[in-house]
Structure formats: structure tokens, C-alpha cells
Amino acid sequence: MAIKTLKKIHLFSFIVLSFWLLKGQNDAPMIDNLPLNHLYSSYTGINADANIFNDVSLNSFELLSTNIQFSKDNDLQKVIFAPFQLKNITANETYWDSFLRNTKLNLAQKNSISTLGLGFTWDNSMHNSKRGRRIGREVIEANAIRSNEIINKEFAGILKEDIKLSGNSKGIYKLSDKMIAFLNSIVNLLETQPKVGFIPFKDEKDFEDEGLTLDDYLYYKDLYKIYSEKSKKILDRELALQYFKALQENSLKITFGGNLSFFSILGSDDVDLDNDNLNDNEYSLQQKNLSLGFTHIVNECWGYSATGYYLEKRAAAETDNDLQPYFGFSAAIGFRTWILDKNYKTSSSYLESLFVPSIHTGFALEHLKCNASENSDCADGILKTTSVTPYVEFKINPKNQFRIGIPISRNERIDSKSEEIGPFIQWRLQLSGKN
Image 1 (cartoon, rainbow, N blue to C red):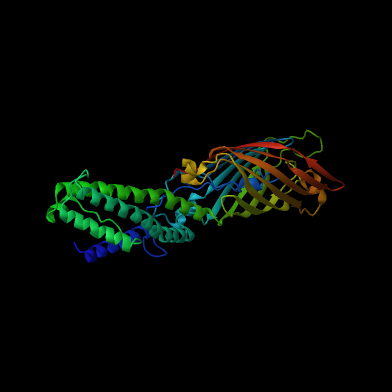
Image 2 (image 1 turned 90 degrees about the vertical axis):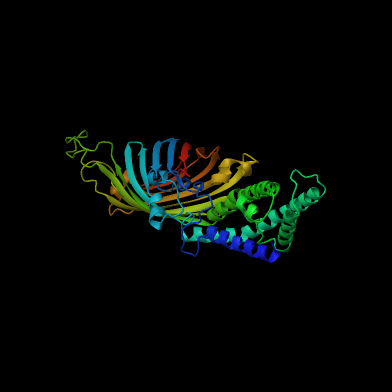
């Protein structure tokens, strides 16, 4: 078993493993061996729309997000559901699969107004995105060699000690001279080429064909098992974690969608309670809107988002209240300010989805302007409303969070201006996809 031959075997093993890990070129299917988990990345999502747009916001990126909010004037019950996230993430998903996975439904009730919506999110932190594939290759290429160096250095020492013990007849296995020569050649390879050295797989038949003993086989079988488990641990933990963090860091989500909102009475006979000769229940559609926004997750500690809204909204269900155009926007920034579990890096939640039990702080800015031709056609007579909401959010575990916020609103009406403050408490339940 010449060292030259071993070098060829090991180099070939490295090349085969590399292709197995990388799956070929830029447009190849997603990396098979890295875990394909949903990442927890919603902390800058629905925080962007704390007050004005909280019923129509589509900024949620989990399988299920619920939002129950109690405030001075407006109570809210809301669910966003992404049904295709019930499917397992697979290595051969297409771009269309990724698009479907981020399709979501919005159901909300704010006071007496019911809202139904549909949204779509393009997300470059998805595993099978072009960016996800590139990051997977870069992480593996940068770290597979480093992990080889660590393992090979350790195992070169183990082999030296086993050879010494066997020579002194103190080892568990009595190794043959031929096996010791083979192990010495492996030690030489691991020390001279630590970046590409691999212990080659050999089964019992290989040992029989090469005239090695049963003790040689049993020893090598145990050695190979320990080596493989060590390699797998690095791939499954250290490498996967670096991959997840690289996917999340500096990632971007772009969300487009729309909603329809309805008055509590969808249909009835003509009713004129105020005796003005106008049907009080003429319309069931209260508003329709479109939104386009992005969320930028800078890293594990902070991120920000912004969304633009176009609405057509009517002041009341009564006859002659036509839909009027509105334009608005929201923006938010959030920071992780306190970690609740100092040992979070060893928790399963962090290793699988990057969730950190923590307290986040931030603020949201929202603005809505009525562009009706007649000021009197604006809902509640409000021409402009601006809301700033500082908040504190407690993230106890991946499923349960609650938030305390203090919306400070400025309303400009036809004949007056006013500032209002209305603290709210919000409880959220989030469930990630199956992976």
C-alpha cells in the first residue's frame, strides 16, 4: 500500500465528496447534505405595521402567524397562513416551488371590519435561490478544508498512539505488521496533506483480499466509525450553523399583495336609521388595497423594513360614499437588545432555526393620506394621519412572543389637528414550516 496510491485514493475521495456536497455548477439542484430548515426571521416583519396598517399588513414569513392586539380604540384579531409551508423543503425544489412556499393568506378583524388578503414574498434567503446555492458552495468550500485540518490533526495523533500501543502489546487489538505499515502511511498523509486527507472506507472483503487479520479489520472498523461521526458532527452542526447564519445575514424579502375589507353587514334590506333618505347598508366593501414592501435582515441582531400602500376606501356603508384614493407607507427598525438565555448557541431552537430567546426594541412609523377630491369624503374626516410606535417585544420561544407598544398619532382633519396616544398589548403566536 504505497503512500502514492493512498494519496490518489484520498484526493479522489475529496473530489467525490466535494461534488456530492456542491452538486455541480451554479444552476445545480440545492445542496443535499446541509439541513434545509426554515429560518426564524420575522422579527422585523409585522412590527412594521403596528397601528394604521396592522390589519392589512402581509409582512409575515412563517407558516402561521397570529396577532391579537388590544388597544384603547382598535382591537385586532389577525391570522396569516402560508399553507404551502406545510410541505417539507427538498433539495430539488424549483423557483416556482419557492414562490408557492411564500404564498400567504391574511384574515383579520379590526373592530367591525373584516379583511381577506393574499400575499406573495420573494425571499433570497431560501435554500434553493441563486444566492442560497452560492452561499452553500462558499460555506462548504471555505470550511470543509478547515474541518479536515482539525480532524486529521487529531486522528494523526490517535493513530500514532495506537501504533505505539500495538507495538508494546498494550492495545485492545493486536495489529499485524502489514496493518501498522498501512497506518504509518496514513499518518504521513494526514500530516503532509491535512487539507485533503481522508481515511478511506474499507470493508471486510478488502482486508481479506489484502491478507490482513480480523483484528486489523475490527480496529479499522472502529476507527472509521469514530472518524465519520466526527466529520458528520462538524457538517451537521458547525457547517450547517454557518450556512444558516450566512443565509440570514444581509437577506432581503420583497412582499407584494392585496386585501379586501368588508363592513360587518354584507347584505340586507334597505335601512335608513337616520332618516336621511339614504340606505345605511348600501355597500359591503369598505376598502381594497395593494402593498409592496421589503424587509432587510442585516444580521441576527437587527433589521428594518418599509412598505408602500395604495388604498381605495369609503367612509361608510351608506349610499353616496364612494371609494376614495389613499396613499400610505410604513417603516420600522428593530434591534435585539437583551438575550434571555446566555447558552442559546447550544439550544436546538438556535441550531435548527437561529431563534434566540431575547428582548427586542424598536419603533415603527406609519403615514396615511386621503386624496379624495372633496375633503368631506375622507373617512372620519381625517385628511392625514401619522403614527409613531416605539415598542418592546419579548421573544420567549419560537412560538410565543408578546409586544407592548405606545402608538403616538397625529390626525389632521378638515378643521382641526390632534395628537393621540394609545398603548396596546399584542400577543403573537408563530409556527414555522415543517422543516
